[in-house]
Figure 1: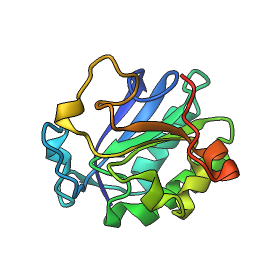
Figure 2: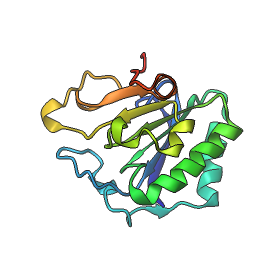
Figure 3: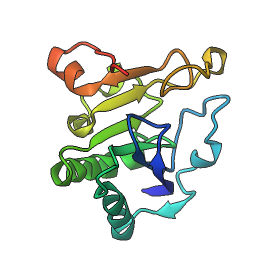
Figure 4: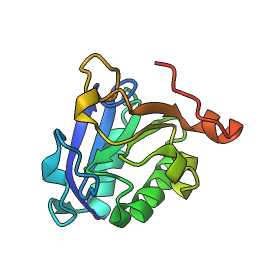
Length: 163
């Protein structure tokens, strides 16, 4: 897996102050995407133990609410397994930190992905330029949903996250 950036003390990609992990690789190629440079799975830097240690160092800070996985697409084929393993390890080491994940995939297509067991909030769906709305909280276009993963898995119905 490759990544482009780790953003520290971010307030735009989920509840509270967060660390954001920007991965490489995306096949959705949404028109109007603001992260086109992350589409190429071979771009960016190699994810390794030093990168994981940096993420954990940020998550150790009391004022950090959690981590957000974005990109690119964390559910791009090359990212699925490493993101699942990382999310599991974060949940074990930092059980009170929340984990958010942004993907161009739809809940209906990924609801059985094992990694969702560790994710608290999922923002699903491709960015649709015609539905772009700068007033939306935590999403770029009106078709995207901010989903409470735990409640959705428990009820077997999509439950939107209360902001």
